[in-house]
Length: 481
Ligand code: FAD
Ligand code: NAD
Image (cartoon, rainbow, N blue to C red; front, side):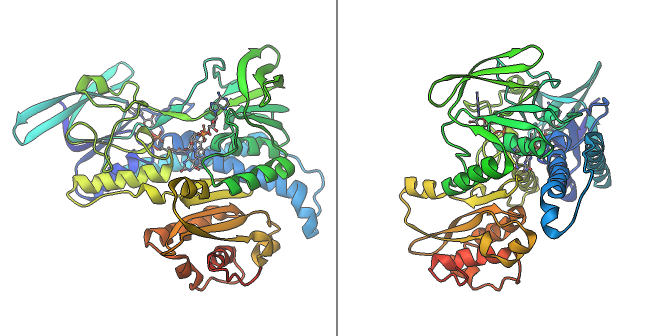
């Protein structure tokens, strides 16, 4: 006899485990099913984000940035470092410990909230009608040879995404790496190639460049970071190539890859000229695809959209009654905080409350040095949409805190609607903008004008003054420039 629940969540990434906890908080009897195993073969909750995504990548970014500071930046403070060296295995153990702490923490949180946690692959089987008001979805949970079934009135699908593969660059995570392999290298490669100048390519490229690799990033699109504001992308490319030392080639077309003692990438450059790149390791980071493998969509007639995502409306409702989907497996940005907020919204909807996520105010952060962060529309999007706007901009170079930090590259730009002054977008490149973007998100959620930010007192000296001055700049009254 199968166990019966109010809600079954499939996937325990930031979308699924957060949804499960919120369901339990709202009094719903909840089960969370997840199949992730760590390299030691043990169940490990937290999905991509905690195991091979957000958290391990940020741990390595921090370690490598500290090394970079000690090697190149401490001298300006009068701090002399002699005999500096990097122990990659200690850096990796630190990262693994942080990951283990969080994945174990999710298990504890589920237990504390009385969520039943089951390890295994969840597959939708069918709906079973016990009576008019009691229709339950049946899910098979398979773990090795062992198979069980659970039943639930509501189902939340949070099965995430997997790396997009290139047929000519098969990932073995020994020499041709996806995100998991790039986060688990045991030594710094002398020459590292990266296919794709997106978020993963730039973050992982930065880690290994700082530790001494020669890093070449090959990008198919003619432009650089095309989702970001053009001016921010231009500034980023300048800093990443001139200061960070990344080699970035855009507009390339790869024709093949040869593996022997080294890896040779054959490609045509932006002018169509045949080129070769010889590297010791190659990261493939060309985007991610929604993960619906083995979910049983075909068993129950769950509709996928033409790009393979589970089709949902703006409330994350799928084509089937009482089945919802959240996170990377549905439309919208593939970001952990977006997944979690959708999980919360769905849990609240199931409990009869009003749950909704505003996809227009999801912040984006790229954790390079300097960091890049934005929310809302870019200048090019506003121009394309024919929306009249005003802009204000202020550089970190003119900010006291940034000077004291020795991190003066970049700027903040505020874009506001021309007539109403309502903020439409905020774009940042500079130190700790990952933290600063929250003020812009709050402002936009409260439909603030640039004048609202301009009239708020910002602590001095702080990096937040750069946002303040950029907002003042919209009315052409920035003070310190
Ligand atoms: P996932 O985290 O992918 O979790 C899905 C879970 O479902 C997995 O555990 C999977 O094993 C399980 N599963 C799948 N199918 C089944 C099934 N049938 N049965 C049982 N279990 C199943 N985002 C940010 O916001 N900030 C960052 O800094 C950031 N850094 C990243 C760095 C890297 C290298 C990568 C790869 C991603 C990063 N992301 C970041 C993106 C972020 O990891 C994802 O957006 C987020 O994990 C999506 O959450 P999710 O719950 O939808 O899916
Ligand atoms: P991405 O979409 O950010 O970048 C992929 C890049 O690869 C694009 O610029 C694309 O044009 C390029 N590309 C595609 N095919 C190519 C080819 N054949 N040759 C050369 N270039 C090619 O994807 P990603 O870097 O793999 O990251 C996946 C997702 O994970 C991101 O979109 C983001 O949602 C998430 N993520 C977020 C963070 C963060 O929030 N800081 C960090 C890492 C990953």
